[in-house]
Image (cartoon, rainbow, N blue to C red; front, side):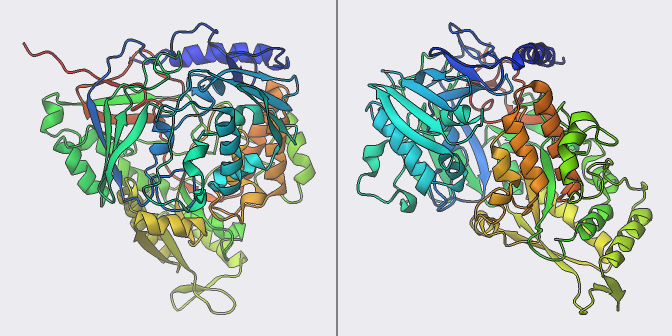
Length: 611
């Protein structure tokens, strides 16, 4: 049965539209804050709408990661960390509801206050807030966390700190941040910074933490034990301070979360079949339909659940590094997109069951509209007309194949573009004016998607051979991949950017010019576009729903026509295979669908009674 959250979200969106134009200035402390309009939940809400406040506590869940780890500090650039830790072991002042585009409610903070223009925000800590060692969370801890993460933490935290004009204590449990920029989202971003314990790091270098220097957090889970390269065990804190908070009721239900590490995805999936793992997420629709019929599924010991969502498609595919020639030439990138025979690849690997992503914000009202840019979107893009690539203003669609395996029509179009860019075939190889052959390296990480990505690249390499292009695939372990990605040491690599219904400052880190040459940034393609920068600024400065949507659609046009990524499948449905004992609120799915905020956050263990 199709869940009703889509209709619920449409009603909420309509309500937001009515109040969007009104400034959400707060004259007094409040229980929550929304990007636009008011929070959907009242001050006396009992629990998040997609959580079961009566969910039983207990049980053990085992999940699997591909690769290894050499750090348990998710807040620095050093080392490779299990990705789950940031979400399960540490908290922020506010917590997010994943049933609204972008709304926060009090977590470590009992209230939030901000001015009409949101040039400042003030939080008041809960008196009962505690770290996992029992010590209170103080204003001093909060200020230290902002400063340390902003100067020594992972680059994802530094951009925000650069925009903080001042931070000060305003009361026994209150902190105020003032901002240097007119940016409505900064007040919300401030509420989502992780809070660490200052005293733990006295006399230590935070950026050079050792493996056993595990940051103390305040969340429901703590690291109980680990073995490098094999596993990490998280234990639910029986004395967790926030168990009765409305934001926490019905969450953090498992007593133990164990993360097992595997050398490749095939071994991980076999472990799941043997029920050594409690669940897996499947990203291939064909495998979901054809390979999940093993005995445990047939007997009902393992259940298949599909979780739809209403968020933008985001972008999944193969990103091209424009810092390196010839990928700095849009004609070469367009040729590579033309040569990618998606229809044939999709039929071969997924049985044609997964539609293709058409733009970064497709599947939502934020996505570009077909045809020429019109109205406010055109007005925003017009000043950059001379620097925009073909299609940004006129309209751009991904090339469609002719349905054949050889894809001759698109290959001919690709060759014309390559010739225009100065490449000619000599002795069976595509060469530039200096006689250098066109050879590209695809860097892939050994993770859960490596098998499918490798299969795609094998098919793609044969198509490029017909153009005289050599494609080499390099598969490396997680640590090597992280370092090479950090310094942008690749031609092409697998790419995934999840995008929200309320995109904001993270867009600068994804494709802003300042991030293009910043090691560790998420701007893997290296895009430096004044138009993209201006559209992000327009999104952040928007005071009406119409202006916000127009700016996002304009950004979508700039990025899509930039031909930075070869898009593949749209993951419109989350697919989770899990032990029958794992339960979730089936009739109250969040707008954002599956994610760590859903599994394991609101799931629970319930063993069926034997007759």
